[in-house]
Amino acid sequence: IEQGRARLLVGRDEEGAVVATAFLVLNDHRLMKHWLWLYTVMVHPRLQGRGYGRDLMAAAADAARSLDGIEAIRLTCRGGIGADRFYAACGYKEVGRVPDAIRAAPGDDRDEVVMLLPLGPAAPAPSSGPATP
Image 1 (tube, rainbow, N blue to C red):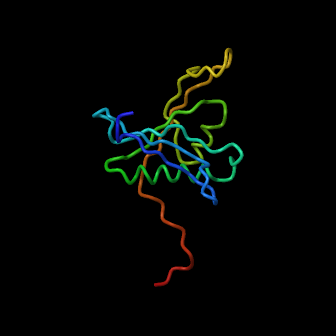
Image 2 (cartoon, one colour):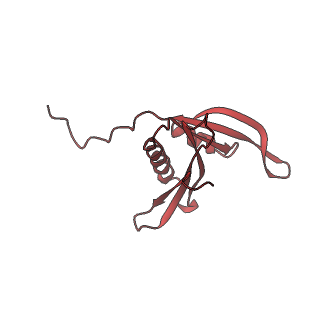
Image 3 (cartoon, one colour):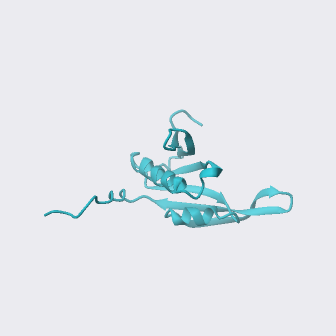
């Protein structure tokens, strides 16, 4: 990867151990610099289902919003394992599918699912109490 195009996101548990990672990669194509790729989203298997993945996805969106000119995040995932449902729950929309593009094993072909998250402004932080006029 060309120097400066990739950003590593690291999620840590309460003790500071690395438990989640993802990469944001800027486009170098002159017509596609307004969106970036999200690659290699991983949460330690023993911690899956505890919200680390959703936290990582929210952090990825916030990090992308902090980069000048970035309007969307694009990713691909393997169909048939629930990853597309996870990303959809994080706000991503399926925008394409390539049938049987991934061969997990002989006789086990899966779709490659293309997903996109248009970036609007960051969601407001939750309020700590009632608003005062």
